[in-house]
Amino acid sequence: MTASSGQVGACSNSRCGHWNNEHNSYKCKEAGCRKRWKICQTGDHGDSGVYAICAKCPDHPAGGPEGFLEYIDLTV
Image 1 (spheres, rainbow, N blue to C red):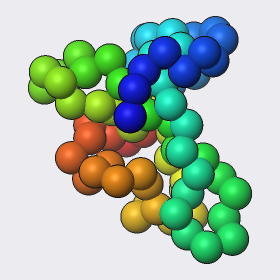
Image 2 (image 1 turned 30 degrees about the horizontal axis):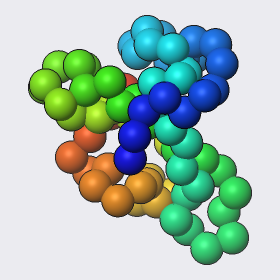
Image 3 (image 1 turned 120 degrees about the vertical axis):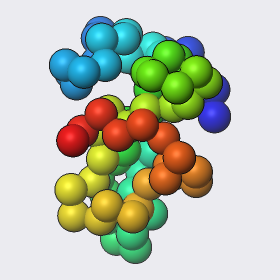
Image 4 (image 1 turned 45 degrees about the vertical axis):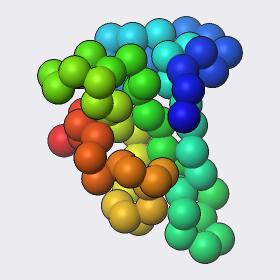
């Protein structure tokens, strides 16, 4: 994963505070689901170098991108 996604505006998660350009979006892994996960890739949400979840699929909490269990969850 890399940052600089080209997305415009600021993250809508009030706990994040970064520009959308620093995020990437991933389709939920659950078959048939069209919802997306939004991952902040700045690496400065607490633990240095750890990505953060700014939005996730509410229907499939295990449907995140590879490695998401190690990310900081800003949705809780």
